[in-house]
Image (tube, rainbow over all chains, first blue to last red; front, side, top):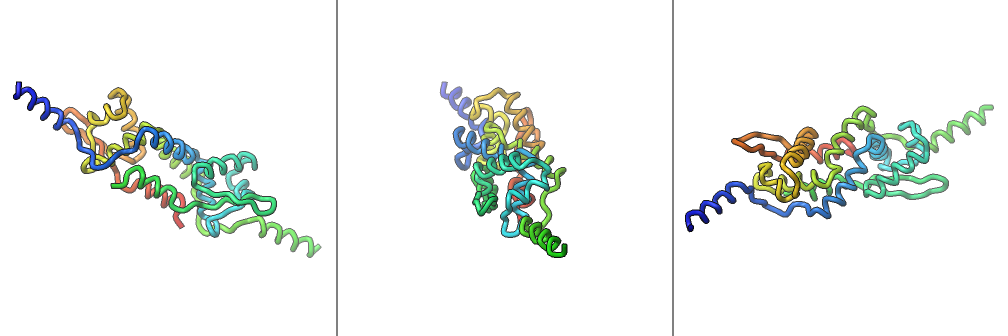
Length: 116
Length: 116
């Protein structure tokens, strides 16, 4: 009986790689998946990249319409998704909304996901 | 007439934020969106996180089934998506496949997307 128990324990130990830290919880993974969905779209990636490549990492909505070749409401919608996910901040000056990059957002996600 | 021309040029200049580097091309954005889709799923985020939290940042498929509560074929499918997107590498030892984290993948994406 003792032998059997020992064998069972060994079999379990051989199976399982030990964890060296806590992985994401199911709830955190749900929230992070929602954030990553904001980046799983080519138009939003281009918009984020154009904002990041602009002087002071900020751009007017009016400058983002022509490069992606979409209507102003569509561009505004994509920018709102990026802002809601924490990649951009929005400020209104005069007629137009301006979007600025929030630096380090993807780096923080990387830390959360895979940091040792 | 000259006055009108000058006014036009000024209006255009006031509109456009100068770019300080090249943003993503449409083709690169398509490819990167495909990569980000691999992370826009809570199960895949949890699997990646568990692999990253395992000793030596490597885990056997057999250890990943129970934590996410899905069938082995489903878990293997999700791991393949993560490997195809460049977040994990796969090696077969004995009966089981082992998946190891590719360090810095998300950091490299961050660089590509928003680096100055």
